[in-house]
Image (cartoon, rainbow, N blue to C red; front, side, top):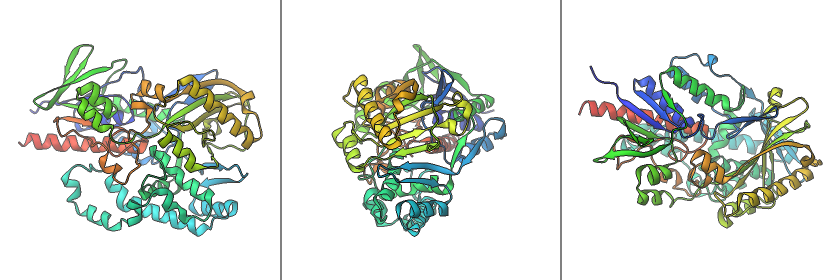
Length: 497
């Protein structure tokens, strides 16, 4: 009888939870070690004075990634998790007074763009058609398989994918590619999608033009109970599959001898395992857990993604003109990104994102009130002291909102909490508070992102937003699939060796 192999997962972020579930289903004995008191990583929540706030990611796309986990585990998803379709992915506001509702129905969205901005509807439908083709022909391959295994490149599907690539996707920036739109407002909308992986649209490749496919074609969704319900569902499913969790338990180091992972050190005790999976930031994995400073510095050669400054505001008023997701655009988008990535400074006219889940579930805020998640993009771990960063950003945000909403929002804030780059690093182990590890500000960024395994240490694997295929909930879930498939394959090979 073959003994059950033991796996330890470092970190209970979304990718760590999904990896644990997949490996438990494969028959491994899985234990997860998490430094915080609760699971979820960035995907957590808190309550204050009747207001519920999702602390991290706020956009839910591709629910099929979660459904696949429950199908794999042979568990009814309805017992754990539910969601609904959101007809408007985002509402956009411009300082010239124009607004756009980004319907997830392509024809309605194209018509809205034409009516509100004067952007020909055909431009929008053509762009989304190309985005869908790019996603189906290329992204589904490169997001679901390791880019660092020969077997991926030798498969016939890759030849087909490479044939569908256009020169512009690799050698034009997203911003340049989006000049095909007639209006600056439309260009801003489609340039914004570079921020979905913390990148600069004026540097990142036009390959990122596939991202709108997820939101505007496949659709946007809202999980019942808010985004934290994703974490709760995956944690509950992992427990059902026999995964053991150890919270408030930071991992001190990874044990490895003869270039092979053997386990971890926790509370100065050795926990032995056959396989180790790190859901920690890959930089900290090398620096602190492995103790290889040379490898850690190599990771830093790639530009960090942007970070975020978030205000959680309990508002004692309702704003009917706002939706679940809202964007208030800056006048000069390129100047904003220059500040974030070149100058490493706050921009005084930031683009503001506001998420209000009480628009979907009124019980997430007291009667007559709203729960605002207010975010701007900022450089990763700026030179600002947190108090200075918060004060300057808050003044800029409130001034912009007063101008564009015609109301002094500051008078209606009854609850306030903040999240900034330093606390993001402290709470989630994301180096410099970069939300997505490395940015995609070069045409080779996808290939330079750290693989889901380490060639130098056997039986050590990596999942999460700092490694392939990238950050964000859908990609973190895909990284879990890639890692579990690699482990399954490697264990099978070892068994026959």
